[in-house]
Amino acid sequence: MFQVSVPPISIFATIICLTLPFLPPILSLQSAVNVWPKPRLVSWPKPLARSLSTNFTINSPYHQNLQPAISRYLRLFRTEHHHPLITPSVNVSTSSPPLQTLSIDISDPAAPLQHGVNETYSLSISEEGETANLTAETAWGAMRGLETFSQLVWGNPSVVPVGLYIWDAPLFAHRGVMLDTSRNYYGVEDILRTIEAMSANKLNVFHWHVTDSHSFPLMVPSEPELAAKGAYGPDMIYSPSDVAKIVQFGLEHGVRVLPEIDSPGKLFISKFLEFPHHS
Image (cartoon, rainbow, N blue to C red; front, side, top):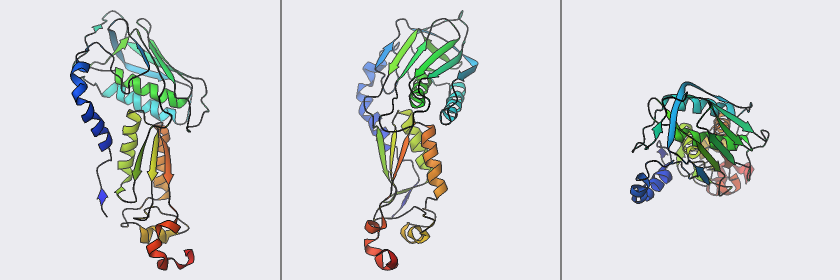
C-alpha cells in the first residue's frame, strides 16, 4: 500500500535501453530522417532543409479535440529548438523563404476515436513554396502526422527537411499501456504525463485498471463509502471530475482511455460485513 509519485514510464525507458546497442549504425546515417516510430514510407531524395518561420501557423478544419493538439504542437515548434545528438548533414537553403504554414486536410472529421479507426496520414514538405501539407483520413491520423512533423524540426533557429514525403499507418490497431491504480495509486498529473508519453510514441489505448481487490480509489457519488473505506487513503481517490479530465486529456492526445472497474462483488470479498446491503 503506497503511492507512487513518479509517472509509470519505465516501459519507455526499457525500450530505449534495449535500442542503445543499435544506435551507432543508426547515428552514422547523419543525413537520414529519424522519426519514431519508423514510418512505412519516407522519401527524401536530397538532404535539403530550410528555416521554419518564427510566425509558423497551422491551418485545419475545426475539430474539438484536434484544436488543443494544434495549439500544443505550435508551442512545441516555436519553443523547443531540439538539437539532435548528431546534427544532420543537410544543405540549409538561405535563398528559399521560411516555411510559413502546415495545412491539414481531413477526409472524415466526424470519425470517433474507437478501435480500428483510420490513423493513416501523409506529410509533404516541398522544396519550394511556403506551405507543407498534412493529409489524413481522420483527426486522429492528423495527430500522428503532427507528432511526426514535430520530430522533423530541429535547431535554433528552427529548420525542417524539405523535398520530403512521408506516408504512414499503424501496424497494429491496438497500441496500448495498462496501468493498475488499485495496487499502486498514481496521481492525476502522473496519469496525464503517461498519456503525453504515449501520444509521443503514437500509442492509442490507455487501459486504466482503476479498481480491484486491493483498493477502490474511485469516488462513486451514489456509494461514497466504497472509496471512503476502500481507498488507501483520503488523498488517493479519483473524483468524477478527475476521471472526466483524464478521458478528455486522452482524446486531445489521440489516446482512448478505457477505465476498467471491478464490481464490489469481487472487490470486497473480505469486507462484505462492512456493506451488508451489497452481500
